[in-house]
Image (cartoon, rainbow, N blue to C red; front, side, top):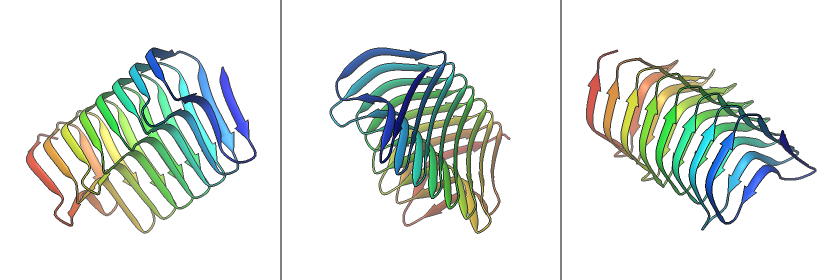
Length: 212
């Protein structure tokens, strides 16, 4: 196992360079009093292929992230669990730069006392998301499965599993505000306590195909 523990911010793996291949079959974990991330990839960093068949978790007294990406991840494959838990907010995968291909056949989850988000794409780009299992955001206040905002773009989103958000005040399976999803294909379930798919502030879904 790889574990990071700190009185302030903490990281299991902190990447500032180039990693050609990163495979986890065990546990990568971070626990801290402020921000914690199982894997943190800094700006100008690159991970060519990240494959998870174990547990990648971040638990923070403020915010927790399974994976926090500021750099470039070409291919991200999850076969088991990526989870973030925070007293305020928890996010499974947060993308603040670029992810080329994201494939999930496991569980990606964010749990927070206020806000929980499965995958967050804020102002940046994810090429392809393919989900055949579960992406979940669970918050005491609000929860979102996939959160695409502030001119964030997702080229292709294909779901044959479950994308869900749960929260007492607001929740959505997919929350798309001021962002763009080019192609959305659903043969599974997209569910939110408030909205299945929420669009606002010129958020667009160019082509949507629902067979679920």
